[in-house]
Image (tube, rainbow, N blue to C red; front, side, top):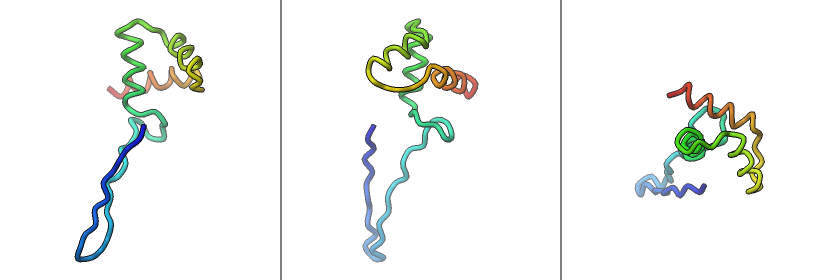
Length: 80
């Protein structure tokens, strides 16, 4: 995912200011909101268990463990 942020220059002081990058859903966590939302929608709306989602990610050459997916799911459910 690529975030484009505006850089604004304050003319009188000639200083540059940027908007901060969006934070992840959880502290010290790599996935963004769309990944976790997709994980939960696939699991609970389309009945795709985590092991099948893990297989799909591996076939797309995305290396993430099944345990990590399980942990993300549990954190997302407990945070809501």
